[in-house]
Length: 302
Ligand code: ARG
Image 1 (cartoon, rainbow, N blue to C red):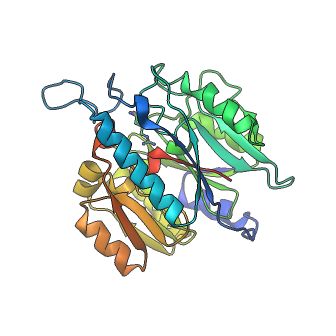
Image 2: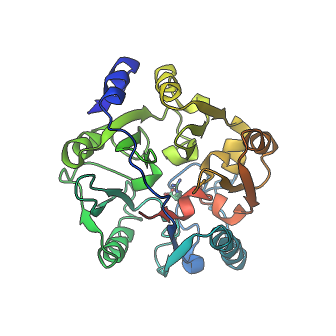
Image 3: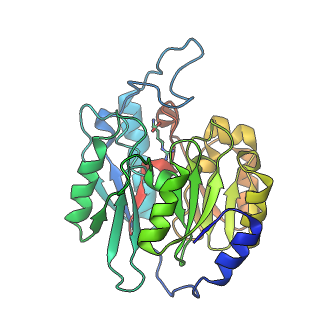
């Protein structure tokens, strides 16, 4: 089922099974940033005020990426890595090429591959598909070839439930979620992203635990916000400036406690601490030049 209004969401939520006992996923996939650059502009962050493509300091990017990887390892996650590719400068944003999910009945690991809006990024997909297939995942692609889907950048699973938060309106098509709901038995709550600066759901909506979400209110309609409040006991509002300048909304919490985020968002930091999360500030300045930060730089595996 798909839900877009509060009334529909009420029915959808009633029909959800009870949360499955599960252990938090402990594995992450990252792509080495050796070939990361800004070579084209496909979002509002990739050009400077003069209209030139931003220049990446590759050595700095490598160092920043390595530090994030160390934090994951320090908090007990296993990090798998894929090599980058010379002509795929955005491949480092490993959240966008796929959406891994469990088949609830068989507990088989599945992955739905993305279909990118930009042809620059399309060749990234088979490289991820091969990786997933050689790691025990059954892979799927969208049947309707007219549809776009940018993986976990727009589609975010609710922990423990067959419930998908489906962001659309910028990169991913609304109709994509009709196919996902029909084929994979997932319940989908649709979230239309209202502002083009938030071109992926993961730039303005970050699930920190089954009960807590951090979001940028102006990215969503009143109706959507109402549904979100129906589901989450705690909704942390991210300051808009911090979300746009620092990608605060692109933080990542792998374990209901540690939150890894771009440094320099004091308002958000305070709110996280107040809600008893443990923030880890990192510097992703080079990746911000491409419109990405912590959340986009990894794929959480099953
Ligand atoms: N330059 C990349 C793009 O526009 C950045 C992707 C960032 N990823 C994300 N999940 N927000 O596609």
